[in-house]
Length: 433
Image (cartoon, rainbow, N blue to C red):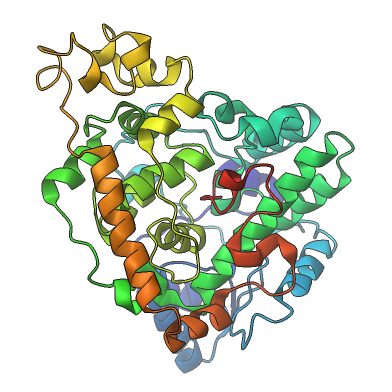
């Protein structure tokens, strides 16, 4: 970023401190009368920060402009017409970057930020050049098997666009990616599916924009006290030591790479919420810290969706054992990330507790399963669907639907992806694209 800005004629200026104090000092020093920043759908902390900046700017007589940067709109009174407005925004011409003239002053250095070492050894590299290479390679070749290959952690790493960190951090814009996809001549079915996910991404971000409390409060108020948070289960889940091999492999892969494909993200969250009966407000921050592409507008609505606390989305309880068989049929992914299971035969890899030779391995080299998969799923299903049936005609649910559900656009009916090839492909965590 420093090199890119230098070529445009402006330095990268890094300042640390309380935001209003830093901005006030800069504006006074350089006689600044107008501030521009991208419009952000952030979390409650950034929302509170922005309110402080807005109050200071008004008091100081400064203009603070926040241009729209994605298909998310502030102060919507209704979701009616949102899809058309979003598509119109994406169709606007791309803007050319003008020459810049930044202040000539000390720029600051990254070590001064006090950032700890990155604990993720295989994190995806950033920067606009890397993002453009990914976009080009995806549209030219990698999108060929996008729809079929994105569900597995084995094939998803290359079949997915991998653009989500660049969209989250702004090295690429949603508009340029959307327009590049529209202009692509190859793999029309895959590109159409990708375009739908780009739109779906904005659809979920609009939820948090409309209701910032989604980060901390269940959309369905009746589910507020539905779950507890067992610290032992939470720690085992966070470390990938639950004794459920495929789940643990996904968690460990995420810790090492900062990325996980869409279906496995959904399974990781859903298994925590249903089988382990953990509150999404305990597990959500852990995933937020680990996803390189963490975007509050995607993360928190999806965390609630996969936990069954929205009142409007279908309750989906993934079976982590079945997912292991379906998405890792050869066991290669599981064996890579859970090497403790090396002596376990393929037939028992996803359920090593059924292997006659497991004595001496489970409980010593690898944990016993911390829950019974079938029994815990049954208990979660009874509790969640029982609550739903009791509240079928609750007016609060109608209010959630009116505020957050999609309208006529078939891409977003019931927050599902467009006419999936298999029913199980619908409504997954979509922030990896």
